[in-house]
Image (cartoon, rainbow, N blue to C red):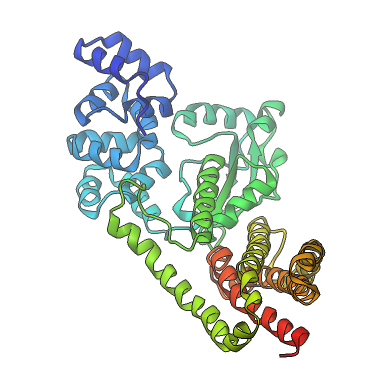
Amino acid sequence: MSNPLLLPEIRQMLAEKETQGLAEIMTELHPASIADFAEGLTVEEAWALLSHGDVSRQAEVFPFFSAEKEQELIEGVGRENMSRLLEAMSHDDRVDLLKRCDKTTVDGLLPLLAKAEREDIRRLLHFPEHQAGSVMTTDYAALRQGQTVGEAIDQLRREAPDKETIYYAYVLDEARHLIGFVSLRDLILADTSNLIKDIMREDVVRVRADQDQEEVARTLAKYDFLAMPVVDNHDHMIGIITYDDVIDVLLEEAAEDIVRQGATEPLEKDYFASSILKLLRSRVVWLFMLALAATLTVNVLSVFEATLEKVVTLSLFIPLLIGVGGNAGAQSATTIVRCLATDEVNSRDLFRVVAREARVGFLLGFTLGTFALMIVWAFFGSDMAIILSTSLIAVCTLASSVGASMPILATRVGVDPAVVSAPFVTTIVDATGLLVYFLIARAVLNI
C-alpha cells in the first residue's frame, strides 16, 4: 500500500533530478520505508529512485514491494538489470520473488545468471510449498573443526557481507555432515589459539528440509534461536532458516487459519489483486457444503413439526438455543485449534480434552440455565422454564464436547483443524441442539 506522505516530494526530486536527495533516501531510510513510499510511483519513477542506490541496496528494498509491484518492476526493466539484482538478493528472497513470477519470466531470467546461482535457485524452487526447504537460504557460515578461533573470525569477517547471518557458524566435516555450531559470542570470548572443535557445541537442534514449515517455526520459537540449520535425510547441511523467515511463516499460517475459520480458502494474491471469480471460488465450495449440512436442522424441525404445532411457544426459544449452542461450540473449537497450533494439545489428548471441555460446557449451561429459569418461569410458566434451562445445560455440554473433538479428529486424519472449527461446529450443533431441545420438551410436556 502506497504511503502518500513523501510521494509528492519524491516525484518533485525525480523531476528536478536532485541526485543527492534521492541518494540520501536510498541510503538513510529503512528498505521497507523506501518500498512503502515508492509503491505509488510509476515503474519508470520507481526504477529511477532505485538507481540512486547500489545494486546491493536495491536488493534489500525489492522484497518489501507488494507482489503486484514486483511484477510491474520486473516487466518494466531490462532482463540484464534484473539478473544483476537477483544475484545481489539473499537466496531465500530471490526464490520467493521467482515463485511469484510466471514461468515465462522465470525461464527468461535464469539463463542470465551464473551457473552456480541457477543451480541454487532451481534447488530451492524444487521444494514444495510449506516445507522447510522452501523457506530456507543457502547463505550460511560454515567452519571446520580443525580451524583456530582466530582463523574462524578472519573467515567470518571476509564472508559477512555475503551471508544471511554470522551470529551462528555451523561446523561441518569433510562430507558436509553437521557436527556442531558456534555462536559469534563464543568466538569473541574464546582465545584465538583455541580450536573450533574445543569450543563448539555438539548438541545441534536441526530440522529436515521436508518438515512442515509451521512445525519448524514452532521449533525455532521454542529454543529461541536466531537461525535453525536445515539438513537432508543423510544429515548433510543444506541451509538455514532465520527468525525473520519464521515470522513470515507464522504470519502466513495465522492468516490462513483465520480465513479457514470463516469457511473460505486463502487467496493466492492480495484482496484487490484477486478477481471477483477468485473470491467466488474461495467461498462457494465451503458455503455449499455448509448449506447441505444445514439441511440437518430443517430435517429436525420437520420431524418435530407436530410438537411445534401443539406448543407454539417452543419456537420462540429456537434462535436463543441455536445461538448459545453455536457460540459455545465455536469458543471450544477456537480454543483447541489454538492449543494444537502451540503444541499444548496433541491428537493423543482427545478424551482428556473432551472431558475437560464437557465440564466447562456443563458449567456454562448451568449458569445460563439458572438465569433463564427465573425469567422464563415468570413469563411462560414452569414447564417452559424447566425445558429451556435443562436444554441450555445439555446443549452447552454437547456443543463444547463437539467443538473440542472436531479439530483433534481433523488433525488425526490430516485435515487442517481450522477448516472444521467454528462454521462446521456451529452447523452440527444447531441440528443436534434442536434435537435435544425437542426431546426434552416432549419428556417434560408428555406429548
